[in-house]
Length: 197
Image (cartoon, rainbow, N blue to C red; front, side, top):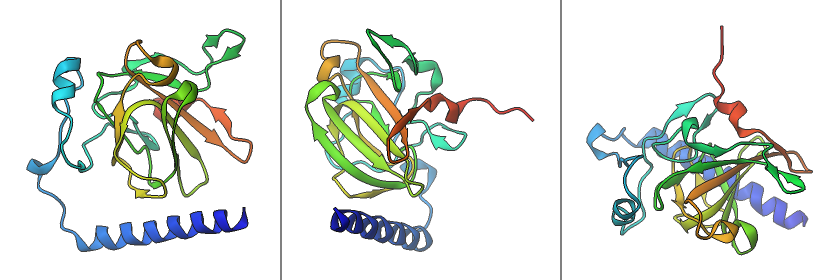
């Protein structure tokens, strides 16, 4: 266990160093090089737009501390909120409706701690940030990153789907924010709530 934690810390530190070096050595891209995704494209059109090679980061909606996890979408596309009743349990995240194939992005700088497939979450991804918070993405259609890969806020992680127990439902991203050793779920909407002076 000690070696696994040590390896994860080394990967995170190495990734952060390489990101810093890359940020200082690269010229900013021209505005014509950004990938854009229509937030209201039909499902068929969204599938046609899937990249044939690993895509570059896309423009995303930024509000508050975190980047919104679905490119071109915002809180108005949330179809199920934190605390919604799910039988005997409560929903521990939010569901964000988007056409299949819409890009799912890193909500913050960090590294991909785990990728897995199966169970109720279907294709899943866990992103860890430097503060130790864990971000959980579920029901993905595809992944665009690998385990232990360092990522920047806004970088494409995968695409929206309906895998796991969301099969044959409206394609959406299930997104959670987990804190601490006990992985306590908190309401992700707190990060995008309006602030008042």
